[in-house]
Image 1 (cartoon, helix red, strand yellow):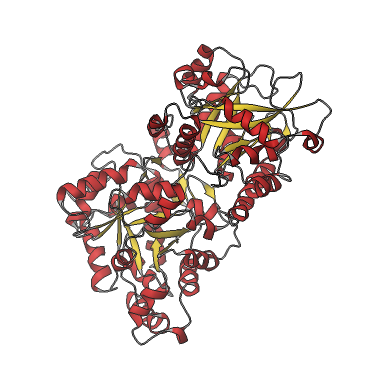
Image 2: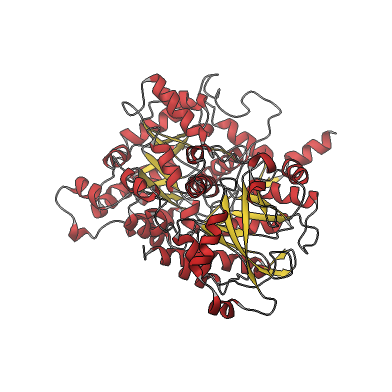
Amino acid sequence: MASTDTSSEEEMIMGYSMSQLKEAMASLSEGGDEECTRHIHGDKDKNHKLSMLQKITAVRILDYKNLLQKKDVPTHQELLDQAEQFQKEHGSILNLEHVIQKCDPAMALAAEFKRASPSKGRMADANLRAGEQASMYAKAGASVISCLTEPHWFQGSLEDLTDVRLSTTPPKNNATADDNDNNKNHRPAVLRKEFIVNRYMITEAVAAGADTVLLIVAILPSHILCDLIGYCRDVCHMEPLVEIHAPVELDVAIEAGARVIGVNNRNLHTFQLDLKTTEHTSQLLSQKGLLDNSITLCALSGMSSCHDVHRYRQVNVRMCLIGESLMRSSDPCAAIDGLCLHPDQYLASTSSSTGGAYTGGLKFVKVCGVTRPQDATEACRSGANFIGVIFVPASKRCVSVQQAQDVVQAVRAFGERQDRMDIDLSSSNEHDGAPLACLQAKGQALEKVASQYPLVVGVFQNQPAEFVRQMVETCGLDLVQLHGNEGFEACNISQTGVPTLRVVDVQLDADESAQQSQKKIDYSKVANQVMSQLTCDPVAILLDTSVKGNAGGGTGKTFDWNIARAVQSCGLPVIIAGGLKADNVHNAVSDINPWGVDVSSGVESSPGVKDIPAVQNFVGNARKAAVEANKGF
């Protein structure tokens, strides 16, 4: 038994043994009292296994211990001298608190550059320049640029940070005599995002051009946190961003004198994400009478849409840090514009009228016919919002219960969640009896969730409601899609257990193409027929190709997309499917600007086995086309 434990202890991570990592973490508490680690995960537990956060931190402790033993490493004073020279040449440090407050009433945005992460893998091409990405962020209105410098898991560097700083700083001949004020007006603040454990790392950051640094309460004993906050202010003349997750960490941050507190909605020990964490922290600060008066509150993870930004605006959050969605975006500037940082912009973007056409553009990409968890993960990583699993026995892509469960677990793991997502459809209740208005309200509710978390859709066709509900519960499906002749009423949540998409078939003759069908379609008439069928039961409508004489779906043929245009002209957003693939989705989105696109066989190497490059190209082409299409509205 003892030999097994020893083997486990000597597991190597980045060249260090587990025993070395544990000793490194324990070394942080030296010089503190017994209470200095009361907030640290696993405190006083002799059998505690280091979490991922603690492993990363321990590696950085040992990295710097080894670095500082080298003779050619700059001393503290040499770094401070470098920092002074850097500021003479490129402008003085910006105060993070002031930068955030100056954005009011708009939400301040910290746009993040990160090449990879432990949970999501690589996000950027190895050749992408940090400065190039940061310049786009700054141009689009980011008031802070966050730069990951951890090299092992996030593949960052101090060189990236300096590149960010220099690329977002105006040429010196544009500066005014009032250097500090000029910087506030003309460049974003630069944040070093790292697992900082000592003063040297802060001094390094200043010398490399940072305006502020991240201090993570979850890894720092209270006496070290106090020391590092004081060092930031007194020696480096910067205001640090202090990150917390749990209420006990908030107490430690307040006691240490933090003025800018960021809430990580992601538990960095378990990597589970809960957007309510920031709201709960806001409530606690309000109860203490500290919100805005003494503390500027920021949200640091899990956001990707204007709905997320607005959600936190409602609870007095002043800055949102957004990284992954911007790094994966084909057009970061358009993505930032879509965040609607100013409340008036959000109000304009979300106001709708049942009398106008749908012009909101592409919100969803669905990859259907998934049978393998690895394909689900890659589709999520590519940016898919919906992962479809098919329960129709006649389909070549029909899944077993176990296959569906494995896909669900993969999607949940990617979205850093453990349970089915709850989609709040209560706003649609006021439109009962008005199907179009009801579906518009439900659509907005679906957007809020699907823009944040990928969801699993179970596809059924003419199967008993009891079976559908059983699969929903057994497999953990988030949504259902009905693809047969069940009728709209079968989409009621009381029948399926979860919000349900209704497929409307667009029929072609067996030997007919979409181009041939154009000659005889009265688009207005077809759109009116679709609208006349609507009830308040579904959550959304999907248009798919069917062939006369066969069950709908899976045809591999496109229908005339002008039908989708006509339906959206009536105010109903629709998802389009049928014959889509990487080489035609750009045209579909550019021409129609649909609410969503759905692909299955068009991205496969064989039935049920996805061709990952094809999936990536499909999603990428759809997103790029959406950016261009939206420029027309």
